[in-house]
Length: 148
Image 1 (cartoon, helix red, strand yellow):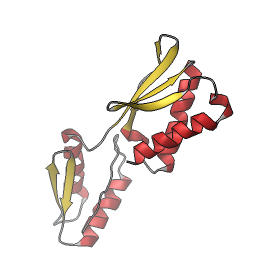
Image 2 (cartoon, helix red, strand yellow; image 1 turned 180 degrees about the horizontal axis):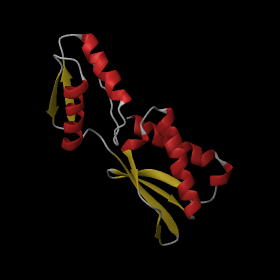
Image 3 (cartoon, rainbow, N blue to C red; image 1 turned 180 degrees about the vertical axis):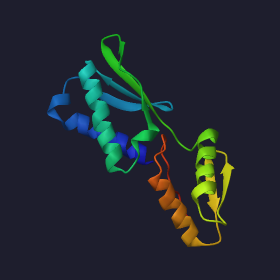
């Protein structure tokens, strides 16, 4: 939902900014991917930069954005980008290993599809695990949905 909001804000900014007027600059959903179009390679890269700024303002990590290189398609340049949701099995195993090795006792991690569920009897232990994972430098985005 936040990615969709960032996409809509980027689209509005493209229609209002003077350097993007009458250049055919456009950003939209194309199935599961995000399609960025412009008449020149520099313009399409500028659209990608604007979109990244909007994602940062919405507190979405850029590690979840996978943007390709500009490709010439007829008279236009296009970039296709995807936004990763969830966590892969390999990355979930890495995170659960970090929790087992460095986390407090009594904390359990379970891989459930594209999520990693961490449970504990104490709320303080869960907060400790969250701060521990924020300190780690993973090559993928880590999000925390809620804790009880």
